[in-house]
Amino acid sequence: MDISLRQVEYRYQANSPFERLAIENVSIDIPSGTYLAIIGHTGSGKSTILQHLNAILKPTKGKVVIGEREVTNAKKQKNLKEIRKRVGIVFQFPEHQLFEETVEKDICFGPMNFGVTEEAAKRRAREAIRQVGLSEEILQKSPFDLSGGQMRRVAIAGVLAMEPDVIVLDEPTAGLDPRGRKEIMEMFYQLHKKRNLSTVLVTHSMEDASLYADQIVIMHRGQVYKKGTPQEIFHSPEGLLELGLDVPEVVRFQQKVEKAFQTKLGKTCLTIEELTGEIEKLFKGGQPL
Amino acid sequence: MNKPLVSIEHVHFKYEGQEEYALKDVSLQIYDGEWLAIVGHNGSGKSTLAKLLNGLQYPEKGRIQIGELELTEDTVWETRKLIGMVFQNPDNQFVGTTVQDDVAFGLENNGILREEMVERVENSLKQVQMEAFLQQEPHQLSGGQKQRVAIASVIALRPQIIVLDEATSMLDPRGREEVLNVIRELKEDHDMTVISITHDLEEAAKADRMIVLNRGQLYREGTPEEIFQLDEELVKLGLDIPFPVKISKMLREKGIPVSKSYLSEEALVAQLWTSHSGK
Image (cartoon, rainbow over all chains, first blue to last red; front, side, top):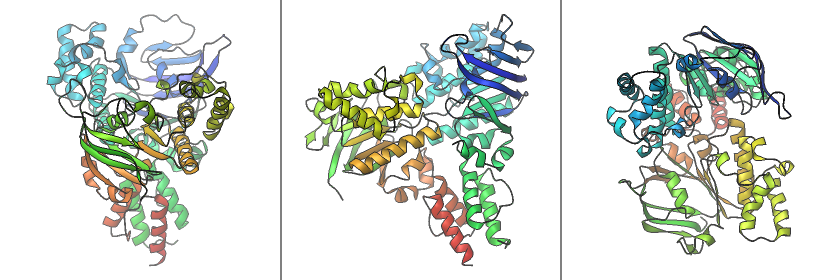
């Protein structure tokens, strides 16, 4: 399912003394199957964009096209359920939203809410729990007896069980240890490929954005500052650094090497393997300095 | 080495209703004026240790000595004056309706006289560069700013030790830098002892000393150089290796002369340059 934001503006508490402009003139295309990363500081408008992706917020100007539906300020919006079913959002610290007596009931809650039968929902729960790397035995446990990492996975399974076409992730690895972070990111990447999902990742981690995304959007003060492939974005990282944003460690290190050696490496490296390969060439290739 | 300021001796702890011990026979010393990083996988016992240090929980077996005092239910109000805590979620630790009220809250609880209170509120906010925000409400602040206010509330009480329990993990990169810089300055200016519980290995690499916890037990203790030499062993524990160490190793494997695993990118680049020009 394609999603497209066209010149979207959003003002919180519009027409009140507390009115605040959160985003303006934001145009982003997310064709079906894209892995898009949205990056920016706290307050740059990332979360506001995220809430437009399944019509939690309606733009105060411009429009959001989600599949066949158009969401604008003008129209009275009815039956947004279909959108919510097809665009699943994994919010930050999703484990805070667990509430049922058992893991199974918790996972089934979403699909049943959208009219799936109990039996079918249970089947989906079994599939979803395996997809997040947990065993079926856990289904009968209380979600509150699980470890933090397991709770996070159960919450994610709850979103997967709705079988969305688009999955939106808001800092999905916050608070996890390095292994947990890697496992969760790999899991979403596998799902993205296998299920042919569109994935939208909102993150502070330039590493994750550069490793997994096809497209990156950099937000700054409510506007799109830059968009492009990871290669395009990190080819000239100076602008990002000026905004006080990080660049991936690989890109940062490449810059330092280039500065010390007063030369440019053959390409913009995004992985540590590429970078060490280029440095090796520098040493063994006898390029002029 | 300085004298131990905190001594944790054979501490065992188990949460009610749990079968596994969250901490098993943990012994360690924390020295006056050091920056100690405690790392470990989720559920390794890091945060439990922080709770024990502040008397939010008590060991089932073993003892904790803080300064001259053994930490018990009788002494906890005394020992809490020595230790200030900054927790993970900036929204969970804002108690005042304005920045200055928030900092004053702890002082009021400790019966500090008003005149001194006003001075301490201003001073500690100055130290975290938040003095321009006295009258602001918490929702107007960024995550990094809120954590700096939390730090101001802690230092207003003049503790000897500050415990950061994943205090920067919910912040964006800029917020994280702000908070760590403030802590580094405070540590220099006031000889404070810093205990930082963290998943951020770049931060841990800058500590004086590191402790690795694994499944409730002390796995290893040493300088960051020593700890990061564990390499793949750390990955097996659910941790990772800082970027400069990783790239040092990969370059060495390619036959590029990198004599050791560097903890700083600058030092590694300098070595690369030296060995390249010396060819």
